Image (tube, rainbow, N blue to C red):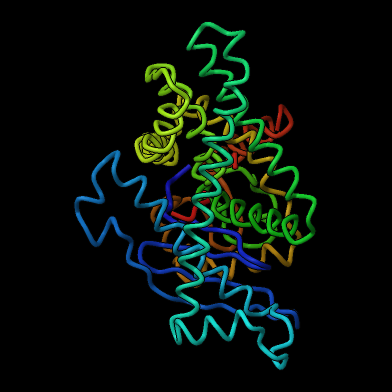
Length: 347
């Protein structure tokens, strides 16, 4: 596997792919055509050198992924809005009056803040409160930290299972799989076409699902060491330590995306397995959308020439590259069958 530097995110009936400062969102419109919008986004880690420091850049990369994700989701949703000729409601009129032309940015900011607060409440505070019920029966602080972590992972799995019942979410998970398969196709030295993308794995070590699982596992280790007596201080510690845990988790995810060592691959397996919940096999039309997004921001032919010179751009694979790709595919197939990773935005 050769690191490509591209990452992505599934949106409504489409995919966003980002390479350095350029990103492109490809959406399958209701009429069946693919609409591609290309733009630039300068991350906070590039604007401010302090934000790019190790163990600090993780939290800012997460913020970048949320901002970019909201932008691309807004673009993709615009193709599937309700009747635009209908009269605006009172809330819409009030928002227009208060915020004017900035109403969309205001709504995006509100949704982001609300989402973060809800995520902290559901995935950090709620597991602590549930685990606290068992404190009278469990004397060991270590056991309590592990119990809280298991409850946190259980809530996450239940949440994913619940939302996956929605048709729109199921299709988004299919586009998520197409995003991963496109990146895996290139990073394993295969030419970018529907057939080769279909053969590639839908799991990728740099995915955001893996990041969340790493956060949950590392939080167990942190809370084994950091112990406070009162429930209020424990709740406060869960909130205050989020940036620290996110920073450590991001460094591991960054390392995993650039390394093929056995130790890193072993430690990445929980996240890879969890991706079975957030990715599904896409159809050929979804793969075409993913390819369109990649080609808008990434010269994959130049990438293959530089990193896989023995790969023929006609689509044939031979020599060492073919062996490498085959070995990688077999390993990933084994992961999928054995219990079958999932991404800032990211695979």
